[in-house]
Amino acid sequence: MSSKRVAGLREKLEAKGLSAMLIGSPINRRYLTGFTGSAGYVLITKEQSYLLTDFRYMTQAPQQATGFKVIEHGAKVMDTVKELLQSEGIASLGFEQDHVTYGVYSGYTEQLAPISLVPVSGLVEELRIIKDAEELKIMQRAADLADETFSHVLTLLQAGKTEREIDLEMEMFMRSRGATSSSFDTIVASGERSALPHGVASDRVIQGNEFVTFDFGALLDGYCSDLTRTVALGSPDPKLKEIYDIVLEAQLHALAHIKPGMTGREADALARDIITRYGYGEYFGHSTGHGLGMEVHESPRLSKASDDILKPGMVVTVEPGIYLPGLGGVRIEDDIVITETGIQILTSSSKDYTVL
Image (cartoon, rainbow, N blue to C red):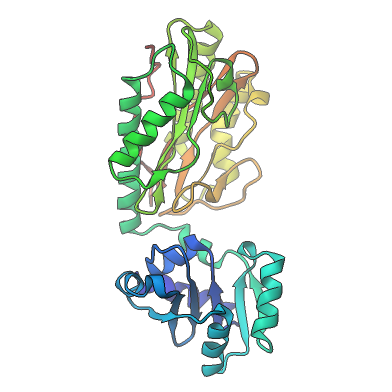
């Protein structure tokens, strides 16, 4: 894995006056090392980069974690951590406060004494916000797979099938083409359930003359895609076509104007102001978008409460929606990369009003 990531973390540690940090988060462990195993800790000091794991991975870990000293830890992981820290004369250790329970923290305190523990937040996550060229290549492939999945599902969608049946077809399609899994629990929300922003697939039988919203993504080589499209079956209530056109206008306007240097609040307003102008502001209750990467929800946020600054290399979603309880809803979502001059759109599925 890139030594730039470890160097970047060391810079952040130095700024906080720390000479070592312990990383236990599986996502952050993989980001720093490239190791895909299910168990292990990363220990970064000023002099060394360690990956501690158990005997199951002592062949795999050295192959994946290039540039790291791979150590098979003892029966008590913290005993090994303590030995390594003392060998370098390190008296304090940063740890990921957002990924450690109080019980685990208490165990660290007891087992590592007299080494002092310093809680830190978001240091690795801050590095992950800006994607490098290799990450963007993977994310484009994940987006392409989501687009292929949507094209596939349009050939299967029909009245009489349940949402879960469609969900299963989508999952099988993505996995058969290299995905580890879906990025999150797939949303297939039909009829009045399309008014549920997080209406994951249920046993409801899809009917004619209604909307169906699909929100899904592929987890491919450690990175997520996230795509939403809404389609019509038959002749739904004209009100649904009205809100579809409004959401599409809002989404296209946001895509045309998002640029680096803008705050998440400003990006959110691009879509929200249009929906509000048409009188549907109260029916758009979630944020316009969120960061995307190794997790489906990362920083930055595109919301009316976000002061995050958009910078080149960030990947975010743009997903305005309108949800009318008892009738149905619409959401349209794409994945984009912030560039030096504007954006690059990763997803390419048609957003034309589609009637099946």
